Structures are given as structure tokens and as C-alpha cells.
Length: 258
Image (cartoon, rainbow, N blue to C red; front, side):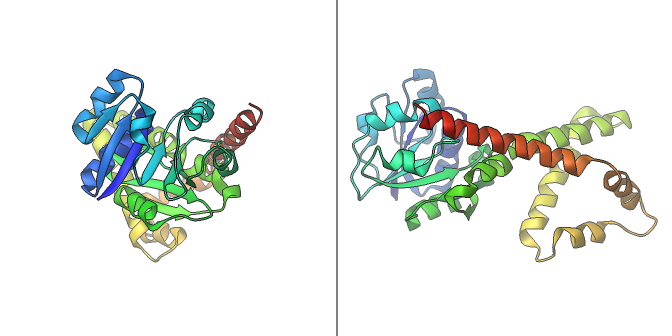
């Protein structure tokens, strides 16, 4: 069992906690100043505390707080070089964290699907230990990237779920417009995204080939794809990702200027 502490039990921290609980491979301490946040995760952890010092004995210490308070939290953490500090704060560079701790630093950008074991995460660091990779594997899929790629990774997999929810909402609305019950339309749209994503992850074919496999000549799918191919959808999705990437870079500048 890997001893893991999660400092910050907001949306992302609690999602990680619940995902780690599902795996059964971790002894987890949850730390937060908000008693309601601790109460919400109490059933998924071994210990809850409002004292950061109580969270410093773990092998892996995850800092899951907002970027603007990372510095304050790090100043209260006394960690050794044998420990690993995992930062998930958007826009906070590895260099910034390393300058404020003796621990081995790993930076990740996960997403809320950690709760169900379906997380996508980008990870970077000079020395990413196996225990961190196994932790990430317990709650989803991960990709090791360079530090310089973390802003775009933040946009793709960190902000990406909201973009996907938006597209599911659009497909749901079209289903309702066509006469489907709202709950049925949501189930069909959401499960279609889930199934398509699983197909991509499990298949050796590229995305164009997968699209072709669904598009029978003169069939229904090709008619819909023609509309998409002739639209600006791809450019608009790319613009949304770029906007999120640029904001991640801005956050990095704001933290550095502190």
C-alpha cells in the first residue's frame, strides 16, 4: 500500500481521492481547512486533517490547491528528498515548486474522471517514480510529456472534459428536437462518446480509418459527416483548446510574478 496524502479536497482533489479509494492500493490522508470538504471525502480516506503537518509523512504528497495559494501551502510543507511531491496546479511550473521543497517534484494535469477510473493525465518531471505512475494508472490513462508541453496538455485533457460535455449537450439537444425523451437522449449521446473513446484507445487504426468504418456509402453517417466536414467545427474546437492553453500560460506568468 502506498501512503498518499492529498492536500486540497476540492473538485479535483476529491475526484483523485475517490479514484484512489476505488483502486484499493493506497492509504490516503485528506487535508483541507474546510470541514465540509473533509466530511465529503471522509468515507474514502483513512485519515482527515486540517493540519498540513499531519499530511507530510506520506510517500507521495499531492498538492491539489488553486495556483494562487500553492506558494503558501509549499511554505508549510517540510518534505525530504526521499518523498515525492505531486503538483496539479494549472500553470505552476516544476521549477517554481522545486525551489520551495526538498522533495522530488512531479507535475501532473489530471481531470475529474479520476473519480471513475477514467482520468486522462499529463505528467512531467525529472524523475517520475514508479509509485506515481502506478497511482496514475490506478485512476486512468496518462501520457509523459515535456514541461514545455504542459500548457497544451492542460487545455486538451484538463479543460477538455468541459468541451466534451458541451458536445454531448449539443447531441442531446438534437435528439430531443427529433422527438427523443430528454433522459434517453442524454444516455444515448453520453454512452456514444464513451464507446467511441474506448474504441480509439483500444484500436490500432487511426481516427480517419475509424470514421470511414462508420461511414457506409450512401448511408446516414456520411450525410452527417459531410455537414461537419464542410463546417468550421474543427477550427472552433481548436480555437477553444488554444484559448485554454493561452490562459494556462498566463497563469504561469501570474504565479512567477508573485
